[in-house]
Image (tube, rainbow, N blue to C red; front, side, top):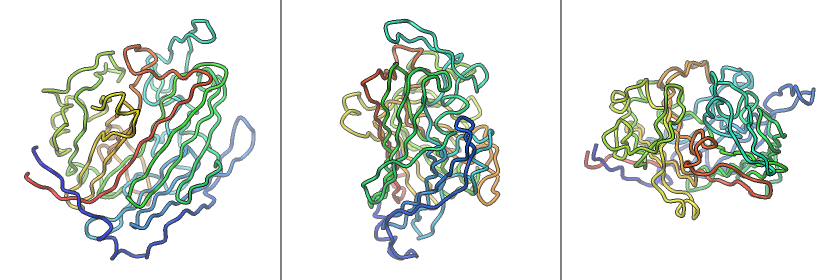
Length: 387
């Protein structure tokens, strides 16, 4: 669909929204969980970031998860556009589909739950948790999204930094990893997510992302409203997968496939064009490696015509997983049923199964090296033009 989305200033519209501007950050207890390794209960906290555009973001320390994003639409209505749960029990549920979670050590899948790596001068095979059939998904059973993170020293007024120390052997991965994620909400209505990690003793693969599920009409709007969304992904190529969602190793052109989303397309049309039950695929962001080193590049945009919310994802990572909640089935906030195609995810990441595909961008971080990546969620308002 040859359309354009014209952005208009959110700041002018937000002046009529209540309550008045109160930017800053608050923190409150949000339950606790039992740590089976430390044999004790750990407190969980909720952090609320607010800006002067009446957008608020809630982060919980369990999984360093985004639990809520409330932002105004073009008519000054405030909606929570992120799926989540009312209490810690929902996030602790083993059936939780990583709602809002920070994902690591390695986002997405690793084939057959293993990879080869030369570490300390020796070629080794590392066997990982198999939590997705015979494969590893999002780091295994007790991965970054399933543990309590600790607050780090934070010197910025409207941000929170959370840290987690992943021990050697965690989920089968080698090396100790010191990881952090910083969330910053600014007055340009952007949520900036900065990932950092350092590796001790042994090399290990690292690919961190966030698994927030979005519906720009509101978390409770369901599949009917999701189908009205329009999507545009800045990718000329993608990584085809087999019947277990494992990349074949090929980087293919999107031309004349259902993965060509380079022009604005309604999700209803896009979903009707898929051979499968929706989208769950990694796109190669159309930005060169040198461009990504300079800063975040536009990876995707999503627009909801009724509310005029325009959501864009910018990242320094080479890959972007587009997922349309094909198997989602959960009871979420306010007892809302989250089901199939009721939300979408745009997960900036390294390529899936990269440790087993040397032709993919490198994910191996060695002792003394550091991993860093930035993803920005930008919230604007817009209108259709020339459709």
